[in-house]
Image (cartoon, rainbow, N blue to C red):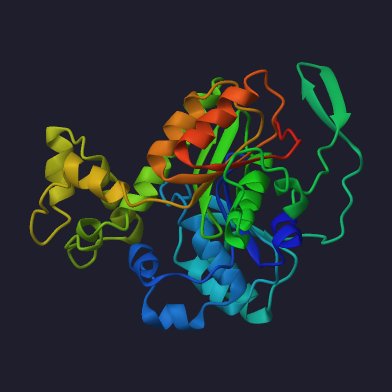
Amino acid sequence: MELKQATGLAAAASFKHVSPAGAAVAVPLTDVECQAYEVTPETRATLTPVSLAYLRARNADPMCSFGDFSAVSDEVDEATAKYLKKEVSDGIVAPSYTPEALEILKSKKGGKFIILEATPNYNPGDLEYREVYGMTFSQKRNDVVIGKEHMEKVVTSKKDLDEAAVRDLIVASICIKYTQSNSVGFSKDGMMVGVGAGQQSRVDCVKLAGRKVETWYLRQHPKVLGLPFKEGVKRQDRVNARVRYIEGDFTAEEKVRWEAQFTSVPEPLTEQEKAQFLSNSKGISISSDAFFPFRDSIDHASKLGVSYVAQPGGSVQDEQVTEACNEYGMAMCFTGVRLFHH
């Protein structure tokens, strides 16, 4: 609901173990994205804003979204229900459902698919509580809704933040607000493309999420798009096979089983080919739930095509981090809001 409130677009999230594996708003797909996400022309023609948002959220990291719990901002329609039906998912929460969508979802998982109806105007109160071994802690709930106004303090030499960049920074910031800290998130075209959660070191969050960004981008490589799967290979098995092809670090036994999924053995995707393809990545946004304490996170983000940065600011190293952004031609804004989530 916060994504919808902040952007005005239908929004969705795919959750695993209390943190989002992906989140997105309804931004039209490119032709290459349709290929990478296995969206047929027939499906593309019937996509509604809410089904489009969930499709993007699910494809941020489809390996991690396996067995997810989904949340959407708008009424679940038939198109969304049909897309959900073919995915391995445990449940959904939404403000409402059309009768057609409800019938489709009720039949999923032999009737064990969890369907929850959210109260749109629910007020959770000002305080939140955590109990640990009989001790109860309370604090003011983080009720700040990140919006355009939080992206106005641009501190770098590059000042240009177009509407798409602001939207992507908002998507990333709201996503990491609900991600286990420390957390950073990368976004592009209205969707998360890498979420790094629960690391003690912020630069490790960047590296973890950055690996996911690389995988997301390389899923659009012509060699990956052209993998010759045998008839009958399941959808999730195709997802997993593409990721392992990109990673390439097979054991001998694993490679035999992997190759058995294809009509002919694919040529390897070489490190040189991956590096060359990744060099075209640009326009990616990154948001951090707290300040960057050193420039190392920016140095690593530069390898991934990051052009826009959002962070609270407030570190004694702010000047050093800002200079790093200037060196790489990035635009960075200070939001003034920490988004820790524990």
